[in-house]
Length: 262
Image (spheres, one colour):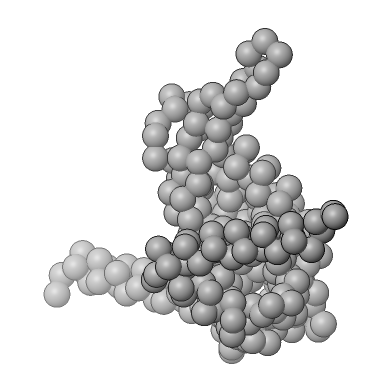
């Protein structure tokens, strides 16, 4: 083997070794996460619920020393839905619905829980890329109709409306580290949160960099009488509609009899 080929081979081995070390360092930390429940039941007296997430940082022999403490972000996304946002326009003394924008596959529920203020966890470009926080999430909301640069107006309106309904939440200090490597987060679900599958993504940060991420799921389901009524409305919509109308007529007649004046 010539001297030039030998040097080229040694350089290649050095690059491979460097890549292996970099890959090992990137895998130095990993996450272990668990939920207090993977199924939340909606009953007749349901007024919201709470799911607790527990997480732990797993380190191996290749873990490098970090200059700062670990930080964590817990992102919860509810079942996707299609929504339409309409801008209200003033016409004289009345307001009417004007231009509208349809959004496809928008999470019905979104929560961003973090262990520190967002600026202390990661820089804005990284948060935006990962959709951490409402500002970063809003930039990832998909559009079905181009608006020539005005998409941001509708995205911001969607997030604002959902936030006012309590369905989009951003809570700094929503993740608490009980030890330097063990943390917990309470995921609060309002009564308005729809049934379906919920994705919980956990991200680990240190020194402004993403170190590891893990995903788990839980389900919000109706049980008992509520589940039977929901199934009837979905599978037998005609019978459900006729039954609802009949019940309303009967209750109206009964009220007129009870409160009739002689």
